[in-house]
Image 1 (cartoon, rainbow, N blue to C red):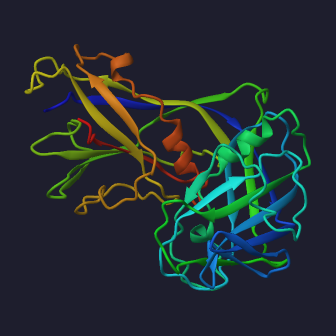
Image 2 (cartoon, rainbow, N blue to C red):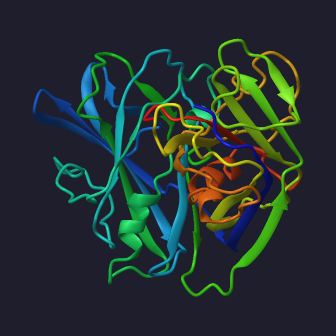
Amino acid sequence: TPTPTPISDDLFLSFTTTTLFQVTARSWSKERYAGLTTSSISTVSTTLEFPRVRGNEQKVGLKFDGINVPLNAIITNVTIQFTAAELNYGEVALRITAEGNTSPANFGSSLNDLSSRAVTNTYVDWVPEPWLIVDESSTAQQTPNLRSIVQELVVQPGWTRGKSIVIIISRAPYDLSSNTRIASYGTSTTAPKISITYTLPSSGSATSTTYTANTVSTQNIDEGVAVVNPSSLKFTYNDGEQVIGIQYQSVSLPTNILILKSFIQFTSVESSLNLFTDNSTQIKLQITTHVSSTSTPFSTNSFDLSQRKNSNNFVEWTVQEWLNVDERGIRQQTPELSNIIQEALGSSGWNSASNLTFFFQRSAND
């Protein structure tokens, strides 16, 4: 099914600045189980093992004090950075929650000190990459975005700047590992660190800007043949299934922003009326970004687009028939792209000279 050739692929962005707050854990606790009974509590350990130690399952609590985030802040990104204390080659699934109390008590030595605490309704699961180097503290040792957990806390009426947060990490219910674990240091110099990025509802007017694509590329999915800046650009199909790449170079977007609205506006150069061979009047596309701070310019190398790392998030676009030549309206406008752009901006090393690259291909739901 061919789709119409678009031109004038302008990227519209509206964003506001954010604030980054970081603090190191002040205390931690391990609650170890033997069967279904709590067997020991430790608040002085220098190693934090997830989710088990010596065959016994355990929970780990991390207390972060002095969280300088105001009430009702809009949380955009939260991660916890660990430092590997030992090697791990296996796979383990962890569940991360927080104590739901806005004034959590200090850790104690009483039985069930962690498991008796009421936790947030929201949680985030984490399947860490292998930890291959002792003392490493990089993306492999960093949690996924815990935004939803912290957001639940800072909108509670009892929340104020300077409050504490207790993060609790345990085995995910679906974890099938038996002996696999990861271990992080729990010392004053290598303690876990939480990073919270937020903005305020009344942070001022948003900044709006428009970028025009610097280069485009098409690549046949099966054969890998790539063409840079082709004379025509058809989504999904052109003598075979294909992926389209659109790149905006040196977009000068800092990492400390929250994308409020974003879309790409196309202008049709031909009509798709009667082009749909299956009698359909629409086609579904999947849009992703290249998650890399060094998204290189397109090349004619085989599988140049396919080999680039796509964002975990994606946007589905149901494209209706483009009825007229030179049409530039809602039908030629993508849905909201904020979530995939935000993921690209979170790439390690992102800077104002980085390129922002989008990929368009047929959706699995088409």
